[in-house]
Length: 143
Image (cartoon, rainbow, N blue to C red; front, side, top):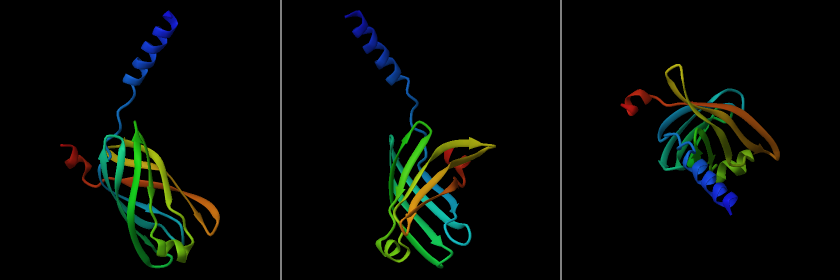
């Protein structure tokens, strides 16, 4: 019985000590490289606790086509995950799946960044790319 109480106390203590979700709400700018050259990608994140929703806009410079859509994901401490929902017309033309981003939030040399990997399938083959987002004007937002 003592071990059960001790285990319950330890579990409650560890849950209470978990790292709160990083505050990632706002506009982020980045680049992705799927075709001939790096292409711009902007995301707008809305955060409610650990839940993320938002929208994105991207340009595929290889096909000279812009597209946009919704995203959803989560934040666990500094770990950030979200899925970019690729529009059906782009999925059909380019044979892409939704993009899955997994990365971390950090402040590096005064710059607030999200850095990680984005994965998707292209014509049945899985590929991934290193992805970096920065938050323009983050110093102003935090003040």
